[in-house]
Image 1 (cartoon, one colour):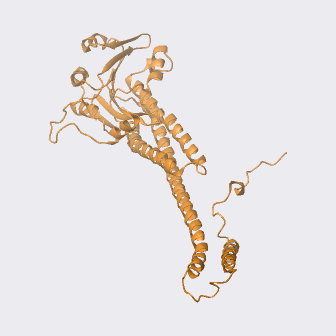
Image 2 (cartoon, rainbow, N blue to C red; image 1 turned 30 degrees about the vertical axis):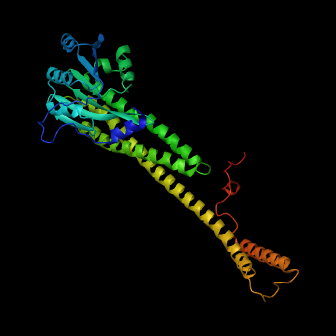
Image 3 (spheres, rainbow, N blue to C red; image 1 turned 120 degrees about the vertical axis):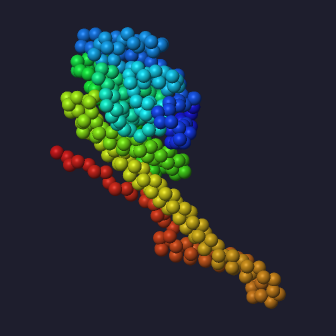
Amino acid sequence: MSHSSRRRRERTFSRRLEPGAAPGTVAVDPSAPPPIMTVISYGPDEIREQRLIDLQELGPLLHQLPVTWVNVDGLGNAEIVKQLGQQFCLHPLALEDTVNTHQRAKVDDYGDVLYIVMRMVQGPPLVSEQVSFFVGQNFLVTFQEGLEGDAFNAVRDRIRKKRGRVRDVGPDYLLYELLDAVIDGYFPVLERYGVLLDELDELAESARIGRTLDELHVLRRELLFLRRVVWPLRDASLSLLRGGHASISQDTQLYLRDCYDHATHLIDILEIYRETCADLRDFYYSKLSNRTNEIMRTLTVIATIFMPLSFIAGLYGMNFEYMPELHWRHGYLMTLSLMACVTTGFLIFFWRKGWLQSAEPKLSSALPVFEPPKK
């Protein structure tokens, strides 16, 4: 699937359930990739990691170590989603939201299990996937749509090498690290968009306006999509920060402040980039309008010069028999001289009025570059 078709599919809302369907119905997308399941069980002194071929292999791994993390990459099998829901007592409404990948970021508390959903992004060109988290007393289950790569490799590496405090605490702290990884994954994406905006700004004087406007339109559209994703992400982070969830300890809530701060920072960056896109678009439209005015002014000057010349040519082109200077020997030279004098007079008049000069300043007339004083 091409990047453009992928972006169009992400912005298109398509609900697979018929109106009036039973709540909690799990209906997967037929085009979704088959699930790839991995499990990591760990404690302070031990870690077990393996890929699951059958869910029956999961039973012996549960409750042997303090924390069990099951990651499902791909939502193309409804039976596996239902079986995991039965295994971990996941609410059917949360499972329905998991397979319907158009959810806004939110936090739903189902008592012993906390459900969080958000989007993980890559780009540009922008691609995103929905990530769902189910956290309980001793487990964490994550569902991804199945795009290549994710933001969790650094967390997996810390678990394997026992770096940080993730091996010494419960699944709520693992949830924080995964949420923080997803949110921090937005920053390099926005940095690349900032580079693209700087390039469009530098090319404002020399680039082809039509092509640049197309690129700016695509960039602005993707930034609007990111803005729609990040705003509810901040609200979800605030909901976790306020506490009151049985699955989140007081100690982990202190770390969740970092997620809220980063989400707020992302919104600030996106607002700045949106204003930059709007300013660049207005500048390009103004430049295009000025260029059109320059062309129209040039054509007007040419038409104004040729108007009296056309009058003289039309006047002496009349076939009256007794016209003055019609049979004069030097009439042709006199007419050409008259036309040259009229043209010169008009050019001098336009030059004195400043109508022959371009309205756009030359690069050499730009503001001088600031130089620090010499010591």
